[in-house]
Amino acid sequence: MKRFFVCAAIAAAALCLCACKAIEYGFYQLLDHGPAVDDRVGELIDLTGGDVPAVPGGSYAFLVISDVHFGKTDEERHDQEFLNTLQAVKASLSPSPSFCICLGDIADHGKKSELEDYKRVLVEPIEQMLGGKVYSVVGNHDVYLYGWNDFKETIWPHTSFYRFRLGNFSYYFLDAGSASLGTVQFNRLKAAMEADGSPNKIVSLHSPVYGGSDMRGGYYALQEESESTQLFTLFKDNEVRLILAGHVHRPAGTQLTPTMQEYILPTFVGDRQFAIVTVDDTAGTTTPQLFDYP
View (spheres, rainbow, N blue to C red):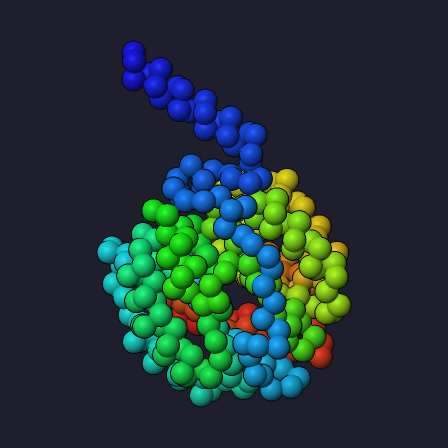
């Protein structure tokens, strides 16, 4: 009986927390054991004028990977096979990818050693092969066991909230590691997008904003449907053309408006897939294509 009352008290506290602070915490904050997203996110860092990819004019392409899960023990890794496939794809595609975006869940347990393995095994070879940087976002596994401090220290550009401008596109990288953007990040993102003069935008984050009708209100999307609605409206009103997300561990895509698509990547380590996105900077269009590696 005592155990029943303890469990009931915990459940009531959890419900109260989610009800009172849903947009700032969501379900994940009960499990992640780290600072809430409002505590992780600072000012929006603008990399424009600094570490921005060098791409050919007109059209260019970039690589996207997600859920690389270094430290995961129940999946075999085939990182060299991926690099070999990427080299072959790079040689055959025109335009070939110039930089890379990683959509989070880099570490499986939030450990610094897992983040360091990611840098050594994937980031350094990819940057050498493509000639551009790897731009990473934080996932829910990355903030397990108070992993945020190690993520911020280890993973460039040492923030979870940043952007850059490339031709006619602005790229935004968001912190959805707790399945919520929180109030601080949302307000700063809204102000930045509304002041952004670029005609097109690409958004990268770990948890999908929409995810599909079978994912709404569940584990595989932002936890608050009201927040998803706010973001959808913000993105629609501010020329977002492509939303890149992971977390779901299977490919999915939703044409949210005639000019805006959410594209969800499968897991890199389990499904052995990655995407190449081709951008037509003049037409303002994006075309994702999925590739397998052995």
